[in-house]
Amino acid sequence: MQGTSVQGASGSASSPTLADQVDVVAGQEPLYLSESRLAEAASVGWARRAVTELAAAAGMEGERLEDVRLAVSEAVTNSVAYAYEGAPGDVHVIAAVVSRELWVVVADDGMGMRRRPSEIRGLGLGLGLMARVSDALTILTRSSGGVEVQMRFHLDEQPS
Image 1 (cartoon, rainbow, N blue to C red):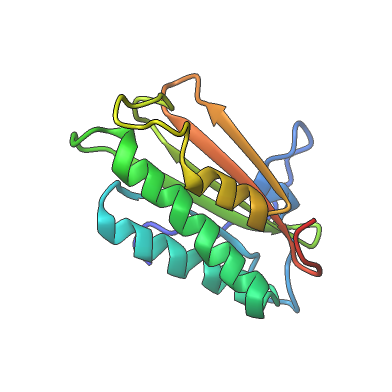
Image 2 (image 1 turned 90 degrees about the horizontal axis):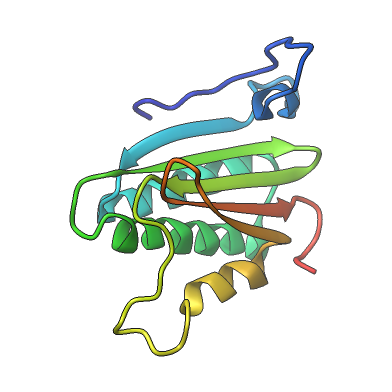
């Protein structure tokens, strides 16, 4: 994968980073993905495959793996469709296994969340779907602009 960063513990004594907390499975490299791609339709499929491969390597399977695939697709699709309104820009995907959870972050540097005049039902179905299939969902406005979607999936159980 072009630009993919696999990282392990940095040994930093001050404020630990996500990479410092990443679990290592059965002596393998740490399960950590960090990559940015152009916010275009092809990036949806790439992100879906990359994150579900990481989740499967951590032992996730079946319906739970499909939940991850669906949630990542929705989050990246939102960035591709709404963040830049036709202008070029990037979508950032981070995924890691931490304390028997899969943590996924999808972010962009676009225009942020806002209601569009053509929408009459609020923010749409995708956000509700992500909330339903994940164990935790947080959506933030980034201080540098854009949106950050944070999702957590327990590796050992179904969503609550």
